[in-house]
Image 1 (spheres, rainbow over the protein chains, first blue to last red):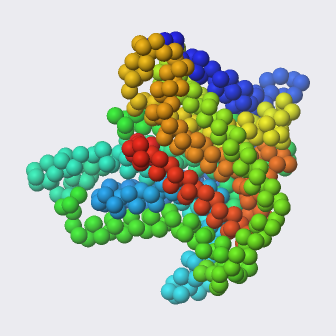
Image 2 (cartoon, rainbow over the protein chains, first blue to last red):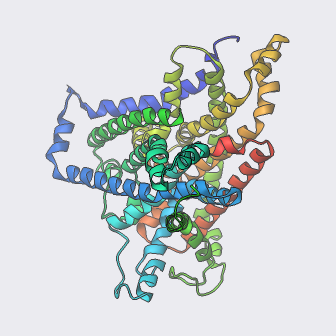
Length: 272
Length: 268
């Protein structure tokens, strides 16, 4: 091998340091700096003193948690079902998961306005079946935001989970069956534990992505379901209170990186 | 598991099908709606018309947003491909201290929430006077799309046999000659896939763009701003065009990779 390969990464390294690392460090600096006076923690004190910030933080945590649980409840059976499909059916099902993954979040979020609106598909169906008399409000509340987020993030869970599931050797399951284990025992004692690292990694990934969600709450929440990102938008573009925004961003960044570190450890185990 | 009860299998299939419906319903609904003749968003559409496409293509601001998006996506995806491709090669083939650190740094824009990248770039670009400039947008989109390029090319380079390159070196070829004449031709399908992903990534980007674009309107930025104000059927036409673009791009990638026998390792 000639050289060290350092020359190949230098151009990108320069761009990343200038256009990504430096701005983030600058932002972190703003969060701990009082103009003309030096380092300070006052922006954090202001943060914890104002109930509105804590409420948005609580909102974000709750919505993220519910959307993540919904993702697991739909995603695990879905991935498991796809694993059991034959060649052609499996390819079609995977295509149906991959395509939405690549379609703009904006498009997928927007479509829910049509589907969930007062005169939308779901409400018309509910009234037609007689389950409800008046339209159910799905939009511009937490329910709509949660549905939209779960929809956008589902492929992030299903794809890695499916990848882990097809690595499980069928002969392992057959061996258990031939030794007299019931399907339920095989699933819970063998199959599920083998998929657990991938499930845990995917769950953490979805949760991280939930925490930073911006587009879906802005559109499906109609301003009534602010999450951290929407609060940050207000602080930067409308108020403007850059230091406060930087302080909140710093917290969000640290939480995200901590969860991501846990994800990396689990993901390595899932791949091993 | 073939031995589980028919009841359990049927329940699983129901959840699976419902899951797929849940995933695809937004896409399936939007397309027919865009050809609706009605002003209100009702499904199924009462009649067929192209009025929303006429409104869209007759609107100079939408046309301008489309050309901005296209130019931005072309420039930033190519720069992400060049920078990310070189770096992916250096990381896979090189041996230097801090390699893992460099790789994590390059992949960071994928993990750091987009809103934080948006704010950091907003503050940073404002500081150096590039906020609201096209150059600022290009740099932002390049940085955001590098991880996509590196993921696709990283896998491809790892599965490409190092010994083939070693043969070229042992025959006296320089490293750059080897890359151009041996590595690149072999990696061409993955390079194409990486470029397409970066292009789509840029064309669909909304959060960072909304923060740093200033007076520039891209298609997603304009769409987002209109959606916040009111729901307008023209948006269904835009959404359908975006879906069409994605379908064509993914089909092209699938076709090129399948022909090269590389479809599986790239997608999952």
